[in-house]
Amino acid sequence: MRAFLRIDGDDFDLRGARLVWYQARCEEDEGIAFQLVTHGSKNLLHVAGWAPGFSPEDLSGAEVTVTDAGPDAALDGRLFGMLLIRFGRVDGARAIISVDGDIQGLEPGSEARSQVAADIDAAVVAATIPAFCNRCGTSLADEAEEVAEIVGGRLVVSSRPRPTCRNCATTQTELAPPRRCSTCGDEYDADGIDWQSDEHSVAYNCTCPQGHTVAGTTTLAA
Image (cartoon, rainbow, N blue to C red; front, side):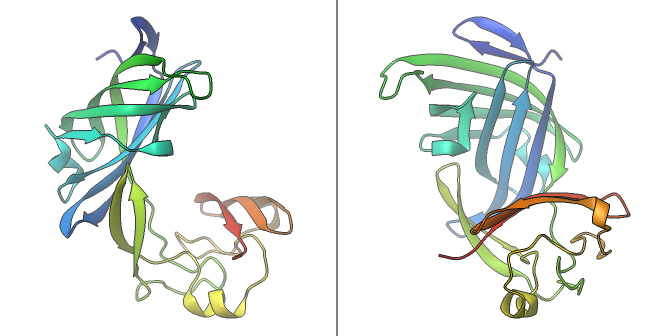
């Protein structure tokens, strides 16, 4: 299959794509929340959505209409007004997906629209769930909590632990990058942490001795 992006009839090749998924409820129905990102030499498309199911295979043949995604659906920074996501065959490693919609004009407040279509061959990846506290390294097995968020214009609720255990979140309130890997619990070496901060937030990219990498931002509560 040739992966491509079409904007107002002009075709562009796509080089790679990832579909990251996790289980989440929407209006009490069990389902899958997903983030799809694909790129070419000059283009970047990302969309997010939710569909009923329990595993990636359940997305096969599904159609998801997104009408109020906001920043969760955009092409090169231009937001989609309406979006239809059609899933072909999906398994635990690969997904064939088509996207059709319209994006806003380049000028602020513009009523112009461009038609967008894409055929995408994406790698399927389960979202990483923290297993160990990124401060003290203790297991997070008993610290799962419900997290509500807007995905593709819909309120979804997932159950997962936060990367910092409750004890550290309460007692270690300084603004600092993680100290331990949230996947294996190993302590980071000094050369495995790249970070920058200001008085309100810290951004980091950390790689542990086992090769697990995590990147993110921590912000002080207002």
